[in-house]
Image 1 (tube, rainbow, N blue to C red):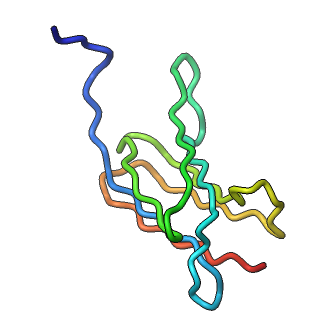
Image 2: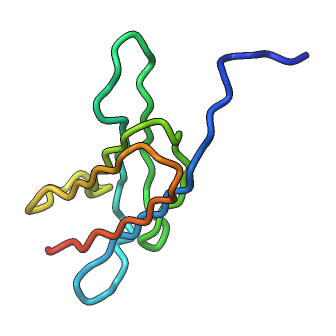
Length: 101
């Protein structure tokens, strides 16, 4: 049986690298990815994912503006906010964050 839950959505690949100034990966980074801004009358799209050896890979809908925020996976506060925004589009996203302890 086929169940239709909505229209088909094209996806684009996203790769996020999180590390320190000395190039050591931040293995305990947590990514929080949301559409930006959230549209009314629609279920918001979002993702929470931890890095593996400082890298996270996922796919996101091409028709959404994205906001990527980095947090410490153990809940510790970072000294500054690490955020990037990306416009809707079909191009792959490759984002790198350098965390200053």
